[in-house]
Length: 321
View 1 (cartoon, rainbow, N blue to C red):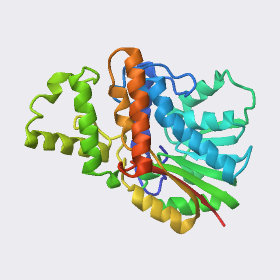
View 2 (view 1 turned 135 degrees about the vertical axis):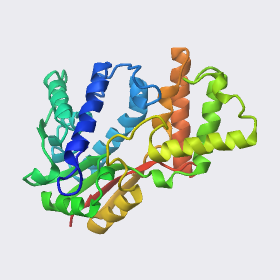
View 3 (view 1 turned 90 degrees about the vertical axis):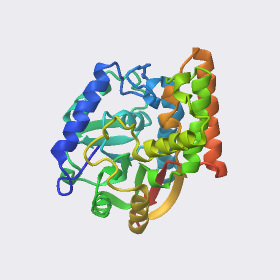
């Protein structure tokens, strides 16, 4: 996560992400998409299992790499703003790009550097430098400026994108992947409710069959659907705190509108609808769980592409003319 000093409490944001990454690493989390391990710390997040990571975040990274290759070219200079523990930056560098990755979280940068130091895939590697700093403290020109789940923490998106333009060469590109929770509907929540309830009844959800007791009552079922809708819109369960003090301070619609005003849109891709908060909740025999995960992810992709599920985010690429 990467705020700017002039708009939010940087210390509070950094502290929240310091605590978050230290807790995850202490529980066994490995911030490398290629070396990911099963981690029971995540009870229903895609981070719980390497297969789930690949089905969700892995596809995001593939989209980033495709868009960079199609519109910016090979071996480009990339600024990754709010890089967190550095797993996206690492894949960009492994693809031959030259990446400057920044974050205000000292713990995230420390762990990212440790992970980079043990990278076992040096062939074709571009370059990668991690720095603990704010976006406004960066100098230099880049071919691509990337925000991967960062802009929605910034209340003044217009100011952030103005600074992006300052750091992009003419013809350079903004690339961002951000949530758009405000567009996610109760209709989408109803499909998640059906899937989760069926999984609970058959013993394939982390909450057992008792979780569905009473859901044959229509009012109880409606409340269950509403609870799921709230969960996905706010990206947390009722007992959970947000990622950081400024989480979701800007909506996806606000970010997209600002990006289109400042940059020429070259591509817009939808993200999945719900798997990021569902795959990790699967339980049971490993082969069955693997098949369920593949099927549910395919259903999500089809639902979004066919229009009967609303994507929960977007990937935008825009050009500075």
